[in-house]
Length: 292
Image (cartoon, one colour):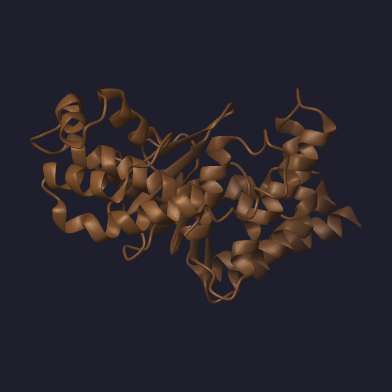
């Protein structure tokens, strides 16, 4: 498990247990462990870690003393702070917190489901395609920041090449495959690479034809990351959406159900894997011939 995800699972898990318990008053919990009310907030924001004894008292007050072993192990993992791969690779200000947490979830996930109607998903982008897309999106950023984003993306993509890669299911809008990002050579190489990804055992790529439209209520793409229950017990999955200014994360069950319904609509309406692979190869061949 990524350190940033372990910290998130610990702090959000404690807050969730308190808020859903009959004894949710922070002042009362603080009195039981002999601390100030603010200390409970600090625990839930990750500023400090409770001792094992304080943690046991808190969990007992929340009615979850049976979770003590799990939360002790999670707490100790956070305290150990095994650096995530990017912590030694980038300057202190980079990556942004939302991007770091997404990278941590990608590293920790067992399954990923990606719906992307507008462009090829980040995890499957070639370097040239990613650079062309980022140059268009980071118009107010300096060249060195562009380089940092590209290096961060390459590091995130490495999860697909490790010995135990996650399973990836992806639905890409047909219009995204025809959008001239970087010109015909760049797009042609990207589609060839995408077809190659689709032949892997752990990856399935489906194309959503323009004639099918988009799932009702889906204005943008999203990524659902399913987390292994033996590692993260209180959160089965999270969803990320990327906006022009930030990445937004969702983990409450009602919102996740909405995204799951959108995913099922997109997956069932998309072309099967073999037909999608044929379409990708055909489009890539046309682009290469036209460019030549």
